[in-house]
Image (cartoon, rainbow, N blue to C red):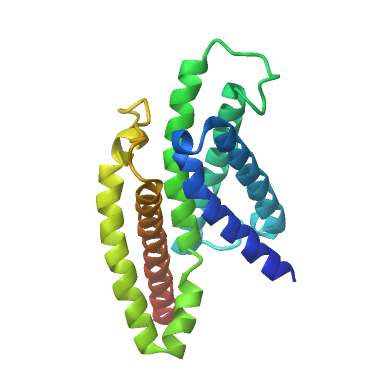
Length: 221
C-alpha cells in the first residue's frame, strides 16, 4: 500500500511539473496553486523517504555520492524555489507583506525553477535503472524498442532544451521567461515532456554507469 502511494505521489509530481513551467499559459493563480501542490507533495515524498537521510554516509560508492549530492542540491532548490514564489505571490499568498526586492526574487525564482526542473528529471531518472533491468530480463525486444523510442525523444528533447531557452534561463543571462501565447499549448507541453525525458534518460545513464563502475571495482577486490 505504501509503495503504491509513493508511486502515485511521484507520478503526480511528474505530471504537474510541466504544467508548473507553463506559467503565463495557465495563468498566475493556477501557477501558484500547482506550485503549492508540488511543494506539499515534495515534503510528503521526503517524509516517506526519511530513512534515506539516515543512511547518507553509509556507503562511499560513486553512485551513492552522486545521489547524495544531487538529492541535497535538489532539496535546497525545492525549498528556496517555493519560498521565493510565495514571497512574490499576487494571489494565494497576497496577504503577505510586499518586499522591496521583488525584481531580485523573480530572477532567483526563475533560475531555481529551470534548474529545479532539470534536477528533478535527473533525480527521477536515477530510479529507472532497476525497472529497465527487469525489462531486459523480461523482453530483449521490448528493451530495444524502449531504447530506440526514448533516444529519439531525447534527441528532440535536446533541441527543445535549446529552442526553449533553457541555457539562458539556467545561466541567468535571460531574466524574463518568453511565452508565445499564439502557440498551441500542446506544442509547449510536448517540448517540455521531451526535455523531461532527455534528463531522465541522462540520470538513468549516469546511475547505470556508476553502478557498473562500482560492480567492476567489487569484482577486482
